[in-house]
Length: 250
Ligand code: PEP
Image (cartoon, rainbow, N blue to C red):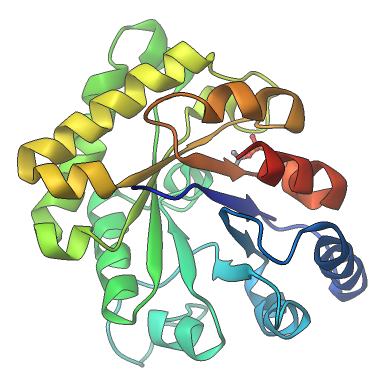
């Protein structure tokens, strides 16, 4: 069966001192055997610090982005999947809506990034989600299917066994508006059905996280849905108490 995963996206927040405190607080608050998978995603320059700080704890570390290029080279400002693995990452977020909207990460490039992550043994968390206008005009499921089509075009069914999908409605990210459990469940079930068309077993094992203003107060209800296997948490993951409470809810 699927184990839940709670992932904390720290976005472009913090400095070495505040991140050091957050790590220490997480270590103090999270049990040694939390019963769920937990990972945090610091800004890339702090990855090595966080990997060191969390050594011996059950919390994995990931990056918020990765370059789609397979080899070292003239890609100024980019960080490769091999470098992330070398720095101690186990996961990487690809296709976060902020990157799709602000940094031109197309669905095709997102799929390439996921592919490179897998080659290096990282678990890509592939984010998909609709904008408010798309939800209002009734095209949510079509948008999600289009974003995943690019993944299906690049990754084999075998490779997809190594991925995690995060459904993150854009209108719920950082806004305090959360999808209702039934709105989220509808999309999660749709995503699982799309994967089932490729491979039933793959779909059964696929972890699909919900993201968008998750907090301790709403996590339990969301994570209780049949096709929600944990959360991708932004703002609330910067508060160790709140994040630990969300992990407990999973
Ligand atoms: C996110 O950054 O992926 C996210 C879901 O943010 P928030 O929890 O703050 O809405």
